[in-house]
Image (cartoon, rainbow, N blue to C red; front, side):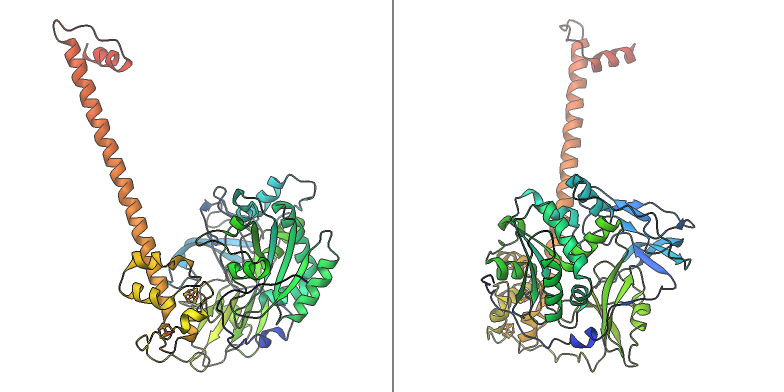
Length: 492
Ligand code: SF4
Ligand code: SF4
């Protein structure tokens, strides 16, 4: 048993997990049409590889990875591409994303599978398989897994598999570990080889005893030593930096990456997708999603990407007073703009909401500087100061007080007796800072372009003047340059 460490802050909200873990994972039925955003990952998006009217097979690429920091997107079933069009994406802003709309033919016919003999393959080939197989972080960040598995060019000694799943209501990782632990342990072996980590630890909150037992049995039979470590249940123990702190005692530096302290961390669902992409040769076309909240039969479903949320939620029987859907958990998730938005790689949970389940909070009151938010903050921040800076639009000060170390966990919101929606202020301030930085970058680029044009025009003017002077009667013969020759030929 290893010595565990603790992180500062954290809260114990009611878990609401038991409702969706009573039944095994079910296969979601095929939707009437699938709406597949071509970008479901962080990084560049490739051009569409299909056109309207084209027939596709399940697993056929819809868009290739655009360079190293990217991932491909695939058809989740066989059928016809009926449109390539902008469609509301599952995003708080309801922004539009380019999507391939697929009318399923009902046959669910795969492209040819090409399993990779990863033990004997060049690691670069395995990384390319992850990128081309569309594997990204399924814990929410959707960071391309092939990029992370390189450790950002830094040596990694510890590989951590994140089975924390600390947010209330969400149980998809728990059920995946209970039911598919042997496959997850194969995925861990692949990632251990890619990262070269000497030590491998699976961190699971101790409120998931069945998952711990299943993972212990599977990892015990693995070809490499894998330690399964139950960690104390405390939200947000499943946060990447928090889990690394608990397991290794190492602090990821402010705005830094885990690789800077020799660690790389993958979510268990990502590891399962790694196994499928490499050993089975199956690109990422589905994921397990928890459907819970104000529904009659909460459950986890293996769901094709692109399935409209409304069609998935219908399988769990939403109650009549359902007034919307939340993607993610109640603390870090966001209300969906409509139930027509599709399930994407980042969709771990869909919660049907109602006034009774999530009553409107009372109107915010002034901050009384009680300090509870600072006690609860797992990032060691001063949330009330960040709130004041964001409210006063003092963005420089907010940045100076480590605004970007905020993981938007919502612990401060949860404990605030004045019901101030603190996280909304942080999201707003971050958005403003990013927009300003973008505007500055655009203006700098335009200025550099203008300065270069000015410089080129001045130089051309000087060269022309020099040439004319060299041709004047009595002028010394100037050395011949290709430009001067061309000009003199033109003049003749
Ligand atoms: S918990 Fe709320 S009221 Fe208390 S200091 Fe923080 S922001 Fe102010
Ligand atoms: S949302 Fe940000 S400021 Fe609030 S507790 Fe979490 S990390 Fe701290």
